[in-house]
Every structure is written in structure tokens, then in C-alpha cells.
Image 1 (tube, rainbow, N blue to C red):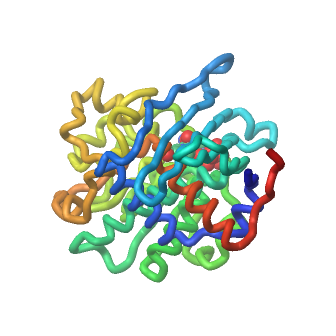
Image 2 (image 1 turned 30 degrees about the vertical axis):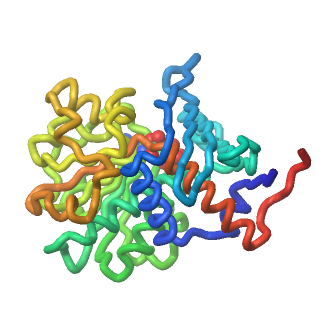
Length: 322
Ligand SMILES: NC(=O)c1ccc[n+]([C@@H]2O[C@H](COP(=O)([O-])OP(=O)(O)OC[C@H]3O[C@@H](n4cnc5c(N)ncnc54)[C@H](O)[C@@H]3O)[C@@H](O)[C@H]2O)c1
């Protein structure tokens, strides 16, 4: 069995187009129903802010791998100088259940998350009438925000005209990739990052929605942290995308609040498995497009399987004795 940690994953690097391809393929397998994924249980005890989530899945097609991610979120860790999220992923051989690999690596989970955003962004980029130059806004600049900025830098490249970042704890420019530093402004409020953004991303740990202003018409909102918008966003857009309605319409997410307070129904949203470029094109160009991903185990297993195979070609990882 192979073992991987963050450092080993980092040595393999991230090709964000390849990561988006992995997610595209897994989304096609979702559409073809070549997967198994029970709803994920949340383990809670003690401080209600904390949770550990079990995320099992089987991914069919050429991926043909099973596994589970076991991901712990303890927001108070940051005050103790520890990372908020710890994540272990186990891959099993599909035919026998034999464990193939274990990833003690929050990074692989982060690459999956930004990879899902990359897959949606690429489909969004196929729309007509997009701006030549892009204003990017982001709130929350922890590990997930940083991976998103790297991904956006690669996918949008020269098209980025400005990047406005806001984090409650402040942001040091040293933590911004050098190639993007000239474009970055560190804002003093979420409003500065949000207003006028063509692409806006939430990567906070907010427990309740607070964004109550209209988004820029035609913009893309990647609501990665899921609890930043008030249900009033429905006054400004009807283009609501989700990864999976059943998963995301619970646990106090913005989608659950839109459902409970504004009557949003599953049939009024578009799941990632139906998000073809044609479906993306058909969304009204005058409205923002808002993507709300709860995080799906099939994407974790597909991404870990991709890295497992990539590591084999470069002899990265450690073999553990049986
Ligand atoms: N949807 C998914 O698939 C998915 C997957 C992984 C992580 N996430 C979510 O992404 C978020 C970020 O993850 P992380 O590991 O970077 O977390 P983190 O706690 O390490 O970092 C979060 C950052 O956001 C800042 N922040 C918190 N509240 C804020 C606010 N209201 N405004 C501005 N900044 C704020 C914090 O200061 C911190 O720097 C978490 O909410 C996590 O649950 C979502």
C-alpha cells in the first residue's frame, strides 16, 4: 500500500486543466450513473462548530476505484496555529476491496475542491459575451482560497485585470503567488472584493450568510464556503448550480436557507452532472451564475486515483508493509 502526505503531493504539482479534466470525467460518470455514493454522515460532538465527515464512493468507468475521505474541520485550530482541516483518503481496488493507498493529505482534498471550481469555470468560459478582462474577488484566503487563486491564475492568465482579496485576519502579499502580486489589492471589507467582480469566490468559514448586495450582472459566483450569501441573492439571479441537491440542501447552507425561506426547489437548480457547455450557454447572460458545491466523494476518489496513478509514473510516495 502506498502512503502520501502533503509534501509528496506538492512534489507532483498541480496542472489545473488536468484537474478539471478529472472532475469533468467524474461528472460524466455521475450523469451515466456509473458511481455509488451514500449520503455523507456528519460526526459532531462537543463544540458544535466542529465536525468530522465520512465520504465514501465508488467511481466507475476507467477510474474504477472505490474509497473514502475522512475529513475533520475544527475552525478553532487556527487560534492554536494548527490547520482547520485534516483529511485522510483511502483508495480501495474496486474488484477486491484491497487498500491501494492512503493519503494523509488535506492538499488532495483542496485540489479536488479547486478542481471542481476549475471544471465549472471552464464551462462558464464557453459562454458568449464574456469580458476580455476579468476582475476577480475573493473572501477568505486560507488553504482553499489560496488553491483557488492559483487555479484562477492558471485558467484566466492574462485576462485578469485585478484581484481583490479580503480575509478577516488580513493577508500578507507573500502568501500570494509572485506572478499575480501586481494585480492584487488587499481589501478592508467583503464589499470591496464583491462589487464589480466578474468572478467572485467565497472561501471563508462563515456560519451564516451576510452578502446581501446584488452581484455584477453576468458574473460567476463560486460559493465554495456555502454560508456567505443571504437568500436575497435569489432577487438577483435564478441561475443556481449545485453539485448535488440532496447533499447541499442541508447543514445550514445558503441553499438550505433559500429552500426554507424562499421556497427554492431542486427543479429550479442545475446539478453538475447536467452542466454541459450547452446548459451553461442557455443561462441568461444578464444574471449572475451561482455555483454551490457541498463537496462530493466521487470527486475526491477520482482526484486521489488520478494522483495515485501519477505518483506511480514518478515513483513518488512510500510503500507501507502489509
Ligand atoms: N464546498 C466544498 O467542496 C469545500 C471543500 C473544502 C473546503 N470547503 C470550505 O472552504 C472554506 C475554507 O477552507 P479553508 O481550509 O481555507 O479554511 P481556513 O479556516 O483554513 O481558512 C479560512 C479563512 O477565511 C477567513 N475568514 C473566516 N471568516 C471570514 C469572513 N467572514 N470574511 C472573510 N474572511 C473570513 C479566515 O480568517 C481564514 O483565513 C471552509 O468553509 C470549508 O468548509 C468547501
